[in-house]
Image: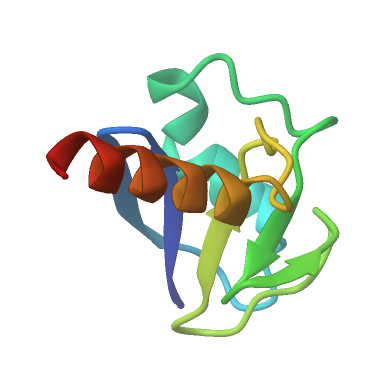
Length: 97
């Protein structure tokens, strides 16, 4: 079966196709993809993984065509992002007036 393993960082996105035996796990797909060699700072013990945006465990079985995603930790509080955007827009409007 064919699986895609995906990971992204600011300014860089990687999608690697992997051929695996039927019933292989998420962890097997990640290891076989070689993505851990490209991004040695990925810590599977700490970072969440998913299949098509649904968080799963490393031992979850995959189906042909699945997309395995490795998620980065959140670096800001998502509740403050709208506040920051609003404040930045207000500053830009005041500067242009």
